[in-house]
Amino acid sequence: MKNSSTPLPFATTTCNRARHVFKVGCLFRPATIRLLLFTLVIIASTPMLTHGKRGKPARMCTVPAPWAQSSPALEDARQKGRSRVAPNECSALPKEVLARLREQGERADPLKFFKSDRRVLTIQRPWLVLMDFEDQKEIRRTLPSQEYLNPNCQWVLQDFSLRQTRLAVSPQDNSVAVAFNTEKDCRVFVYDSELANQRADWHLPRYVQDLSWSPDGKTLAVLYNGHYNEEKKTISVYFAVTVPQPDVWILDAQTGNTLTKFSTGSNQVRIAFSNDGSLLYAINDYLYYGKPKGALRAFAVPSGELVRTFVGPKDGFHTNFAISPDSKLVVVDASTDWRPWYSLEYAGKRARFVVLNAHTGEALFRFEKLTYGEKWDPLCFAFSSNGKLLFVEFPRSRDIDYEHIDVFSLEGLY
Image (cartoon, rainbow, N blue to C red; front, top):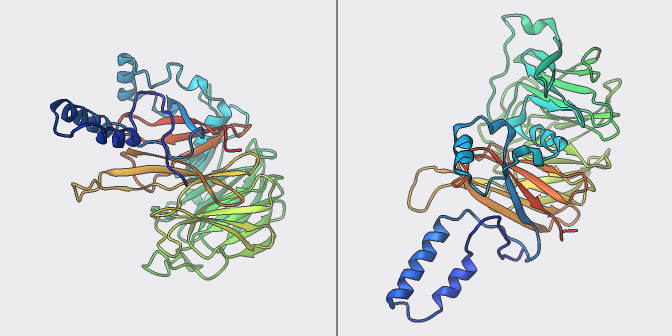
């Protein structure tokens, strides 16, 4: 992938320009020294730049994340009138885009938006709650099982690789699938879109890591946590060790019958069907240190044959990804720890994502910035309906002191 700078929405200077400055005149002239010092200060205070071919994706604007609108830092930014923050805030973003952003990644769990709707599904454990997002009113709540009200019900100890609950909403009819992980039992419940009818209650042998509906709503893919076996115990202190049994089951959404099983070969954190249903993508958790160190893999459905492996830089790809509406592009989280060269202490994370050609794996575009989030907190992604815009939610960064969404134009990648 060739490196060059692409436009940012506010003043900056590039490393290419800095190298050119070093070549001009005598370095010991006072005016030149002042110019060099000024250039270095600008570079040091500038966030990481985009990398890609000239004329390729550019960051268009930055808007506050809707869930950060009440932060004191945002109010301070409003009062100071920072030009880099769009004044219309989130009104510039389509609601369905915000819904998909909120749906992506661990930070959004347990919270799901219904597609093209004002309703949101959330968990107030052990209750499932359907709410009106705009009016902030509860529509309905339901209890999947009376067992969850028992004081002796022990939920799994939630850590970076295991969650107590998982949610998935069908893109076809908004049917709801929810998984509950307790120390003694793992169950998946299926409801209609109104939470009025419980259609299924399935007992599963291992802890559920993720759920994904097929595009036609006829099947449900279940990803099991690769660190725990059927006895609900970790199999090794080494994160790269994986339970040998198949970790992906594809179930009939009506009957719960297992249609196929296959192994991904490593510890995964998230799965998603391609938009035509022919592939199932799986991405490593950030703890995985096998070979490759972290990757996004695509498996054929229903055979389970490994079709493609996308390998990233440094710590590889991990935690989260999103697929464009036409399935031609995949955006992947490639964030790493940030430890400055002058300090041995952890300072935050280098929030990085890469846009890939979904067929060849070629890296088409990369962007990164220094933030104060954790490496395991996922970057959240959403494509516009036509695939021409990419929305990325970032944690607090060096220049924007609140959660925010950057909007990128993908013109030129198709």
